[in-house]
Length: 116
Image (cartoon, rainbow, N blue to C red; front, side):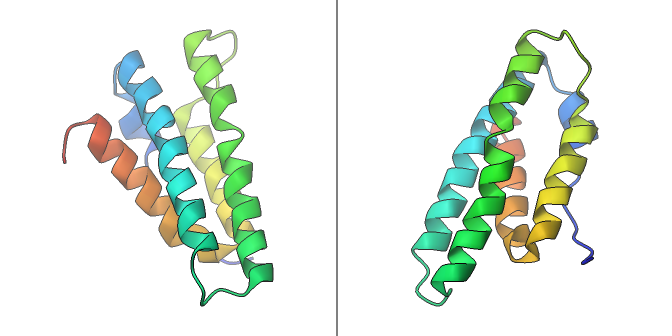
């Protein structure tokens, strides 16, 4: 298995207010849609690789609404650190998405914390 490095967002995001955490995940799913657009518009990537990369980003994206729901109605404990680990797992499936996913995480955090 390849070792991937995912931006460590779990603990910093946990320190944000609830509204900021919600904004982070809303922004993250938006940033990931931009990442998908970057993949499918890149003529240098073979079609089969495009499909695979988009597949694994989709695995991350379709879990974000569940995380948002959990934050709004915390009937169970789904720590941001666990969500971070889950993202790392999906990125390990195709390490070629690592840069795009990290960029999405970092931009989301910077936007929410007004570092831009």
